[in-house]
Image 1 (cartoon, chains in turn purple, cyan, red, blue):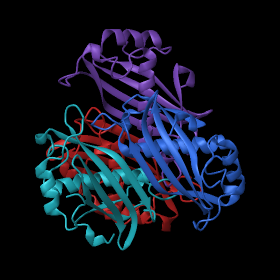
Image 2 (cartoon, each protein chain N blue to C red):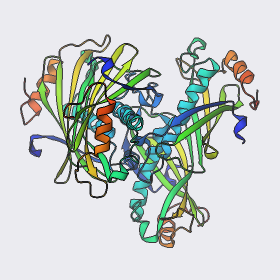
Image 3 (spheres, one colour):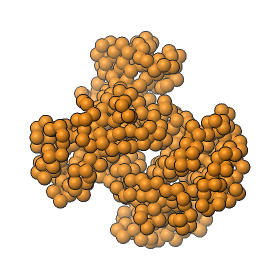
Image 4 (spheres, helix red, strand yellow):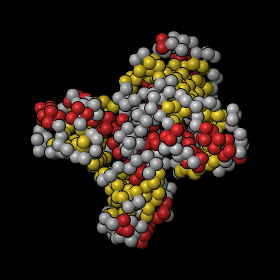
Length: 145
Length: 145
Length: 145
Length: 145
């Protein structure tokens, strides 16, 4: 997937506490990086998490995470965390994420979220305004849109 | 402070993710260890956090943490986390903690909590049954008891 | 996958610091749980990580992680973390992990590791004694064994 | 301590993974914030950690941390992490840190480091160029300078 498929990117610097004795970022911390990227992606869309979903009585729960590690990140690295919507289902959405360090593509990720009722945590359709906003925002059309 | 001043102790093994590139536990993780020790200490007292305080409309907030690092802990170390009440105020309590690895005393800590109203988070007196239980439990009498 | 497919299981209690404002374990922390499970699994096999691999000039790097979230874990939950080898390649091995809370199957995971040279981090065959030990240990034969 | 005593400040946004079920930043994470602040403070001084100390065969180990919690930080808060040198000893230095959210002073901290030999981890004098740089940088003179 070429880097230009992503319209959204944010910078992130690796913290000392995130690096393990192998000298590389501990694998679980990439999910934190993805989560920070998701937060800023939804802010960019105008639906900051979670307050932007609350008027629609909606919340998001992650149901699947995939991380592919191509090359490790190290302490003090300046990374770019890139996020886009890969697929828009009726009640679920798949985000694709990549982490780059300059021209090096380090990490690929996939995060599947289910849109749920804010109160009883059952699945419900993704709010129509969010769906339209994602379709309008993305340079690369999400599958299922 | 001799080890026998502590009646409560729990074992804890250092995780890979908790160790930094210097090969030692990242300093913030000792506060997690203290927190785990506090959780088990209150369970041992019969007031598991937070459910054991809720009937008294109480919750605890930490207002001060102190960590003195004598020697570092490393990956896979089997530690003992020891906790006791050092001081019982009217609305606050000070816990003292130590982390040992066998005969080596690695870390000393102090945690000051304020007992608060469960709903409006203002300070209120420590529930009397908890106060009495602490005094009855500790081999070393807490100051202010 | 039935629970009995796993010969190895270890208990783990959810810490306060691992739970997020939704009241559930933050998703990245399941990779820490898997990592702790992997550590104890290799200890059980007699090849404690990383010292059990060093005589073979080997180290392991994770190249892929997958987490499927069926139901969330919450603060203070007593979990079982189960690990087995799902596939034994020439230079890679796939671990399968599950997290249960009593009879509830909460989380499924997959971790793919590449065996690397301890010094130059290039891939090399899994040490034969480790391969044989895994085959001898597992009740459910790993694919590729 | 008035905010203007600090010449160095950096922005930091609270991550979802750093907030606990009470809806506030878990206390151990403030030590991560201080550590990130320390990293940027030393970069600002021209002695990026740890590479700026290596030519002097020096490394820093934390020997004491103190955190005073005045008001909690919450998810998505935009914080300022402020760091200055409070005291310059022969082999140790004390950093003072504060965390503010706009005009609200949330957290105060103290971190004591010992300068050690890079190889045998025994204490040794703080490199003279670092000492001079700190004295020249700080608006508020460190004690012991």
